[in-house]
Amino acid sequence: MSGFGTALVLQLRAFRRTPLTTVLALVLPVNLLLLLSLFALTGYNAPTGLVMGEDTPSARAFVAALKDTHNSFELRPMDVDTARRQLKQARLVAIIEIPPGFDAGVRAGRTVPVNLTVDNVNLDLAEDVRRAVPAAAAIFAERAGHPEVRVTAALSNVLPRDTGYVEYLGVSAIALAACIAGGVLGGTVTAREWEVGAARLLQVAPRGAAPALAGRLAAAAIVATAASAVTALVVWLGYGVTPRHPVEVAVALLATVAASTALGGLLGARLKRVLPVAPLLVGITLPFYLDSGALEPQRFDGPWLFALAHVSPTYYGVGLMEHAFHGLVVTPEPGWLLAVVLVAIAAVATLGLRKAARP
Image 1 (cartoon, one colour):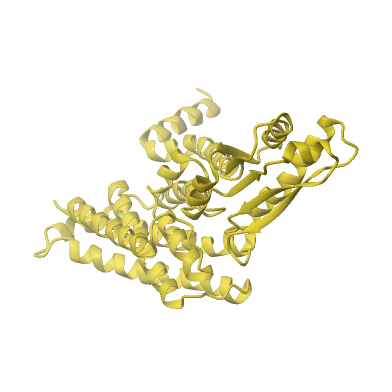
Image 2: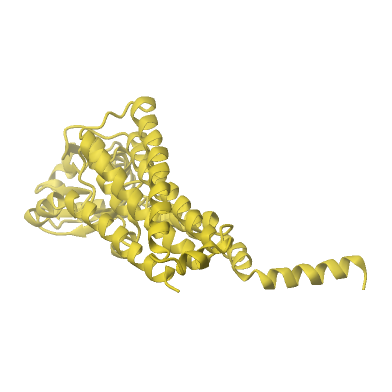
């Protein structure tokens, strides 16, 4: 066999002897596809309450124009009281109200105001909605053959101030930093114990392996907290985003790091090798980060994406951070519950690590 053939066979055998590394390499393209798909799925079709003040040809034509504005609205017909209640409950991004007399006003050549109420919790999302209504008005005017646009948006915002997209995204990145730093460090320190054979010695120690692993995880959590704190300082001093609730920032940081470090430690104990820890955790965390409310409140992106987001600690960390920095309520769950869930994740993962450490 030639040198080329020998090398080919030996390398394929090496891949077979390291199945985890090989699987990670094969999964990477699928992971990137998932990442890009989530980026697209979490950025369009804002759930919007549609209140029809009249059912006339012009009103129906304007609704058709709203539907044809590219990837802008998920229109949900309802009465005005239901729409306002759902907007207050953060189940809608906006309400569009077509007023009574719409058809008559358009036919008379008057400019008819359509009421637009926007939950401006995120500037990027709010601006998409604000731009889409005038675009729909232009489509409506062109189809109706009017020489000028005869529909305008009478805008009302839920919040007194818009939150800039970079400001919103920068704060959510603190939660990402906490998850990745805690997970990678926690997974590395526990996986190394098995990789170098120290775990077997600890298992026969009088107190078992649990105390030593807990100490290593605590050290990993301290370093991860410091790294995440640096990220928070960059957002504060570099981006100019001053936290409204500094104590809540500290609680959110510590709780997110604790949950991610414990989960990383459990993963490291299962993998028992250091090499795959970082790529696997980063590969898992990034898609969940996009599906955690990092770009906009996750409640607006559909029920199955919203349910999936709850699997990862990034969802709870992002919710806490956005409230701590901006005072925004971006999750249906209250802040105290988000913190409790993170602590519960840390506790459950720690118990799982103790079980994995038993001989």
